[in-house]
Amino acid sequence: MRILFILLLIFQFNLLKADEINYLLKIPNLKTFSLNNKNGLKYLTAKKNFKIGVQSNISCNKLGEKNLDNKFSLIKRNLDIYDYEFLKKINLRFIVLCQNLYISKINTAGIPDLNKRTLILDLEFNEKHFERVIHHEVFHLIHDSFPEIFNEETWSNLNKKGFKYADCSTCTDKLGLDIYKNTDGFLTEYSKTIPSEDMAEVYSFLITDNKNLEKIKKIDPIIFKKAEFIESKIIKINNL
Amino acid sequence: MIKKIKASTGEKILFIFLILLAITSFVFFYTIKNKCLFVDKIDLKKINFPNKNNIAIMNVECGMVIIELLPNLSPNSVERFKFFISNGDYDGSAFYRVIKNTLLQAGDLEFGNIENIDYFRVGSGKSKLGPINSEINITFEFNAGSVGLVRGDEFNTEDSEFFILLKDVPLFKGEYTPIGKVIYGLDALTKIKSSDKTEYVLRPDFLSDLKLLEQYN
Image (spheres, rainbow over the protein chains, first blue to last red):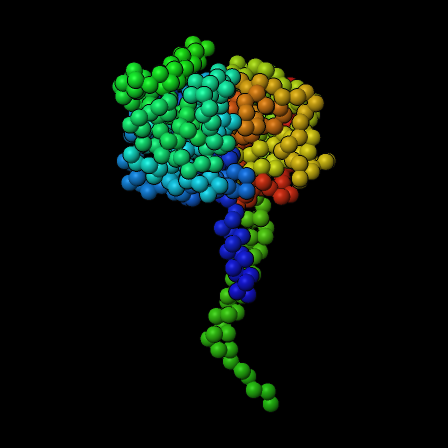
C-alpha cells in the first residue's frame, strides 16, 4: 500500500500541467511577466522549477520575487537598446527569467534557442558581469542567425599564429570573465575557449564598456581587428 | 414470540445516508452526466450573417459552432482552410490536443480522423498539399474564440491543423496565423473532452463535421 502511494505521488509530480505557454515554447512552469514592450520582447518567469531538453539536461529554478524586482529593470534597460526589426532578424522574441540555470550539470548564464526565438537567462549568474552577460548571450543569437557573416575561420585567423581554441566552451577550465590587464588578443580568459565565445565577449564589451574597449584597441592590434570585425558585421545585419 | 428490535440512532443515520447517496447518484447519472445540458442550441435560420461566403459551421457533440473566417487578414491560409472544409476533410477530426479551458487542437488529416486515428503519430500528419507560409498579423488579438493555424517550432510550417482558443491568450499575438473567430457556440467547445494533467487526450472527442455555410443551402 505504501509503495502504491509513493508511486502515485511520483506519477503526480512527473505530470506537467499543460498551458498555453508550454504549448508555444515547450517550456513548462512559466508565467507571463511583461508582454507589451516596444521592441516586441515578451518576458516570462519561472513560477516553478523546470527541466527541458534532451534527457531533461537543461534545468532552471523558480525565481524569488525580490530577485526579479531587482533585476528586471536592469535586464529590460539592456534589452531595450535592440529595436523590433533587429530582434526579428536575430530571432529573439521571448526572454525566460529563472535562477540556477544548468545545462548538462554546468551552470550557465543563458541558453539561446534560435528555433523557439527564446533566450533563457539565469538571474543569479555572476552579479559582477551580469549586464555584459546579457549581451554576450544576445550575440549567440546574432551569430546563430547569421553564421555565414560571422565566419569562424576568418575570426580565428585574426589571432596570433599558432594559437588554438579549445574544442568546446566547456572543454577547458578557462572560464574567467574578468578583463585581462594585458589583453594580448583576448579580453577575458573565457574568450580563449572557442571562436563564438570570443566573438560574444568582444561584442558584449562593445555594448557595455565601449570606452574601455576603445583604449584597449589603441594598444592591442588584435583586439582592434576583432572589434572592427564585429562592428562592421553588426552594421551589415542592421542594413539588411 | 419474535422480539422486535428497534433501530439504533447510528443505523437510522446510515439508512438516511444511503438514501441520500442513491438520490445523488441518480441525479448525477441522469443530469450532470449529460455534459451538454446547459449548452444553448443555435438556430441557423435565426442568424443574419453579414458575410455568408466566409462562415464555417462545425458540429460537435454539444451543438453547433459558427466560425467567421478572416480572409482579409490571412487570405492564403483561409483559402486553404476553406478548401479542406469544402472537401469534407475535417469531418471526423479528433480534438486530440486539448488544454483545459484554454485551447483545442484538431485537423490532423493523416493520423487524426475517427476512421484512422493513430495515437502514436497524431499531430505529425500532413495534408497532401504540403505546408504554407505563415500570415502573421502583429495587431490581431488572440482572444477567446480565435481560430489559428497550428505550426511547428518554425514559421511557414502551417498545414491543415488548427486551434481554437477558449480564453484570451495575449502571448499568441504575432505568433500564429489567425484564420477565424467563433461567433456563436463557444460553449459547445468548452465541453470537449480534456485532461487535467496532460494536453494529449486519450480517446478524444471528434468533430462530426465542418462545412461552409454555402454547403448548407
